[in-house]
Structures are given as structure tokens and as C-alpha cells.
Image 1 (tube, rainbow, N blue to C red):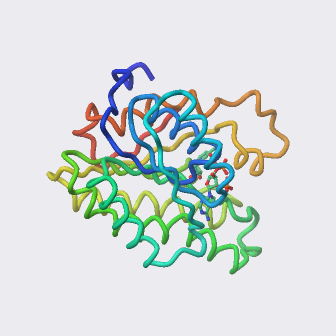
Image 2: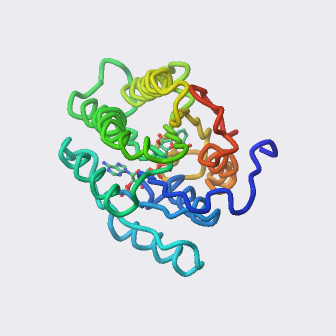
Length: 245
Ligand code: NDP
């Protein structure tokens, strides 16, 4: 991860939106971005968790964050239109988005795929991210340089038995990033994916209930890549699939 080291104030003056900022990797990223000087917009569905992250950022003396309570499962296009307008009014532009929030859905054999769970996974992991990005592009284009980072997975790069809709949704994430990156080529906006790899979070524990979490990397350990992709050091990276481990 040494190649991803950036200056301690590499994100100073930047405004960055993080989805699923209340827990797991999103929480660690929000704290890492704030520690590097960014004003972080904390988006998530559980307000209590977002408030806890807000308090941690404030207590550390980092730039004052903002909270956007939103359940991406029920969100409509209007929610994203309104959100982009509010960001434009309050901040003028947006320097980065970390699409981190995702749901695992139900793992199991193909014959057991449940329509309700499939539709939820695709809504949160794909549709919501596409509509959010669609409306945020206007404010991202107002930044001198802007970075859109999507979160993939090992099963979004190679299919694996029993990973069902979660795996398809992560392939769609890679595709969405590639389409956006191609459209943004040569502009001030760039798009990339990160596969965090096995990380000590609730989602991982749900997917692998028998595993000892102590054998896994913590979210904090992955942060050099997460910070690098938001910093101007990565301005020439576009359309790339990164791995944090
Ligand atoms: P967690 O389940 O720990 O955290 C996910 C976050 O997303 C939570 O804050 C959760 O909110 C939020 N979220 C879920 N659904 C919604 C929704 N409908 N609306 C708004 N927010 C929502 O997961 P991880 O931190 O482990 O995962 C982060 C990302 O990394 C995901 O995209 C995941 O697919 C990916 N990943 C993780 C790996 C791992 O080993 N952990 C490996 C490969 C990829 P709440 O806290 O309220 O539930």
C-alpha cells in the first residue's frame, strides 16, 4: 500500500460524499477522508450510526461534516435530484463520491434465488448508485477535479457458485464504472472501482459465519487506497479496477 501514500492534508478543501457511512468500510473511509482534511457528507439509512460518526469527526477537530439520511432501497429519482441541488446550494460543487453502501442479499444455489431479495440487491447496489451518479454529475463537473469510486468485490470480477444476485450486482457495478469512465475520458471527472477484499465487517461476518474475524484485515488498514483515489494524486486513473489487498 506504500504506493498509495498521500500527504496528510491531501483532501483539504474537498467535499466528499460517502454512502453507507455509518458502519464498516464506509465509516472508516468517512473518518479517513475527514482526517485528510475533507468535508464529508455522510449518507446512510441508520441516522444514529451517522450521528456517531459525525460526533467522532467533530471530536477529532476535523472539518464539520453533513448528514444525509436516505434509505437507498426506497429512494426515488426525485430524492437524488433534491440531494444534488442541496449539495450545489451548500457546497457549490462536489469533489468525490464513494459508492460504498451495498446489501448482501441471500446467498445460495441458483434454484433458490428469491425475486424480492434479487430486486432489493439490484435496487440498492446498482439502480440507486446509477441514479445518484446521474444527478451528482452536474455538481461533480463543477469541481476542478472529481473522483467517483464504486465498490466492487472479488465476485464482481469472477463469478462464484452460490453468490447469486450480490455477484451479478457487483459485475453491474464494474460495468457502470466502465461506461461512466469512458464517457468521462479526458474530462475533470474520473471513475474507478475498488475491491476491498476480505474485511472485518458485519457484511463479511454474515457471508462467512464460521470465520474468525481476527484473521481479517480491518477497514482502517485499507484506507491508503481509498484516500489515494479521492486525492489529486490519482487524477490520471480512470476506468481502472483496483484491489485494496
Ligand atoms: P457493512 O454491511 O458493514 O456496511 C454497509 C453499509 O451500507 C452500512 O452502513 C449500511 O447501513 C449501508 N447500507 C446498506 N443498505 C443501505 C440502504 N438501503 N440505504 C443506505 N445505506 C445502506 O458492509 P461492508 O463495510 O463490509 O461493505 C462495504 C462495501 O464493501 C460494500 O459495497 C460491500 O459489498 C463491499 N465489500 C465488502 C467486503 C468485506 O469483506 N467486508 C468484501 C468485498 C466487497 P446500516 O449500517 O444502516 O445497515
